[in-house]
Length: 364
Image 1 (cartoon, one colour):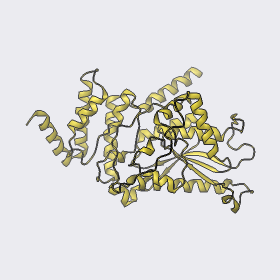
Image 2 (image 1 turned 90 degrees about the vertical axis):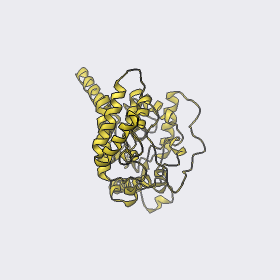
Image 3 (image 1 turned 60 degrees about the vertical axis):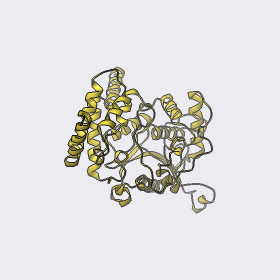
Image 4 (image 1 turned 45 degrees about the horizontal axis):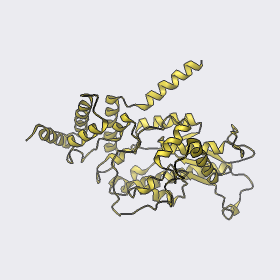
């Protein structure tokens, strides 16, 4: 047996008896290989993790590849996605881009125009927000359109000209959402200027979600949109103007409009069953015809601090297919990822916080 095979066998046995210690061992070895030379790319390190973590050692917990990808500013998710057992495919839009390559200004203008056709200033506009670049861009677009008058000039007010609607971003809190992601979401929302509401979600009590057998994403998004719908309906009931009545449905008016960050590339992935939940709740997607690359270009043009952050799907996506999405398993994954971030200095939140502090001091 080679030294590498022997090390893998030891890691497998260690995972069986102590998953957290096993995860720590795999991470430490990967970090050691990463640090051994500055010429090795993050791709080489990811391959090292794959070699160190055979199928037996990751049957309990998978160490994410996504966090390592941010070292080289990767713009596409490297984490593995699960395949649905029912083989359901999500319909794709007729076009995968708003247009051919546009300038950043034209790109943002087209997105603002599309958003303005969806948004209603008399409705409760709620963005399903995670702090990722997609939902952050949508939050910025919705907030920009809502707080601007018809001429495109920023009003500086939430309710201008008698409008009774509202706009806010809502993030769901659960064991599957890393703390660093929540901190990033708060920073970005503050930067945009949009109100942020944090609410607990209940997918952790759903047997379909816990079993993690192919429909966990559908279950999770169903719980999320249900919670957002309730929040929005409560907001709408408090702010609907007297001229809104039961005939609104006949004229196409909606008291509640939900938004998500689904982009054109997402619709090409048949494993994203959460898109079915979005369809069930009539969620609007301003980025539906925008590629991931253009999402990042637009976000950068608008000055969003997370425009080049690596993709950060929920912690459940790191679990091997069929491994239960229990709070304990999710906590172990989160702990392992924090080890990687700390060892490789990948904490984006601290960097942004220090930058903001420096700006405040210079302003003073």
